[in-house]
Length: 164
Image (cartoon, rainbow, N blue to C red; front, side, top):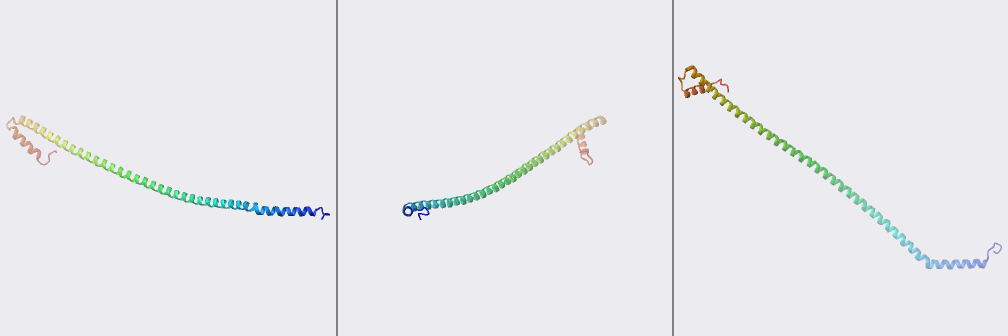
């Protein structure tokens, strides 16, 4: 072995040192080191499991939020539709009220026009009667009294074919 450049005593000492070192490492260093590595591995697994749980909770929360958001949007659309229907009903009520008011005003105007027409006709009859009396007095010379003349004129005006 010496021809190969190996010192057998030195080799034996190195093998013994290696075995002693291996024994000491195996006995004192490796168990705590392996325990620390195992704890770290366990902590990493737990962290990954917690991250997955949080991810699932987040996904569930997000799905719940999106469902609530869709529900709120649907409710908002229903409220908007109800407001539109309500506004349409109010508009129809206002239009109906305005039509009724216009009909009342129109009916009142017609009644007032009819009343004014009747008043004018009555005034016209009175004027015709007065003119007829005046004309008859001039023609006849005053032989009929005014009451009799008015009675005759009234009979004439109420006969068929009057101008009312």
